[in-house]
Length: 445
Image (cartoon, rainbow, N blue to C red; front, side, top):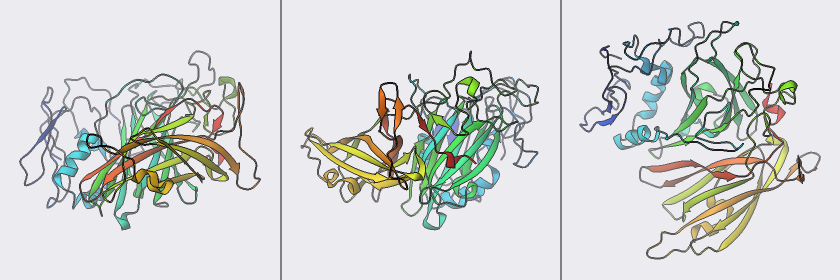
């Protein structure tokens, strides 16, 4: 990486492919992608005052940001855009990116920009920073041409040093990779500094599984206890080399919801320990999505619209169970077509599942429509019950108004057009809350 180190602000980022003359401008610096015949992908930055800090390769005492804060008019001392990806990931990306067209590459960059908003209520979200991130899917089978980049961002800027010599903005991320076929869990931890960004290639970070979902939990760097650290954001970028497609998906953010004024048990940097009894936790060693420790699971999910399936248009969805591998969840679907007709379907799964829309009902292939109206529909998803696979007992959730048998789950979906460069992923919408949901103990080691 090269580039001048002049003072001042940059006019924007320009991405240009070797052999092409159509730059795309973004705010923040001057950048350039070189691929195809180029030996590597490069980003050249003139001045990026809002990416302070020195980039160190992983393994430098476990710390990647060792420099104090810079003022906005201070020249960057190192090519800080290098913090976007680990150095070894650049090499992996060289292989992945070969064969992708310029239009797909620009699509990736455009989809990386996320408009932040605000939501109210104790529900998970994709737009507010949280303490737990749930990635509904990862694909890591490079032999079949699929790969996933997992990003996690720490938006905490505090460099105030505590009595444990950690900064208040420091955090340990505990990665729980869940194998979608066996529900077995692989653990990984990463240390993050204030304003840090970590992007990993799932197949390198977790070589033990090729498909499933991922949970990231914020922990105290000193004790390893789960903490309320509502500063984390995340997203995924999926590559399908065989189909020459890229698509993206936001992580689901669960916020810590404990009272900042009345939670006495904290780490030595002042962060609330979410599992402590004195703070309102239940000291069970699990991540509880019960509206007391973290946001609750939603009560009802929605797919707001999808196109009628045909030979060139396909839709699919992934669901994550909040009860792990020991319970079989029954989920009901209400499918609405263009004429407001309602069709019902249901299926059962445990742990995690990805299915085509047409696997649920053939109705999705015949949604009606007129000359002026594109054939499309929408779906409403509800949990019916969950049965323990060994004991046969139903899972139940004690709520203030009685007993609720609706099992907790959450999900995302995608649509793709065969043979052209289009594929999109979206989180499902949701409403209501499911209190008392506990992420299964087998996710905690």
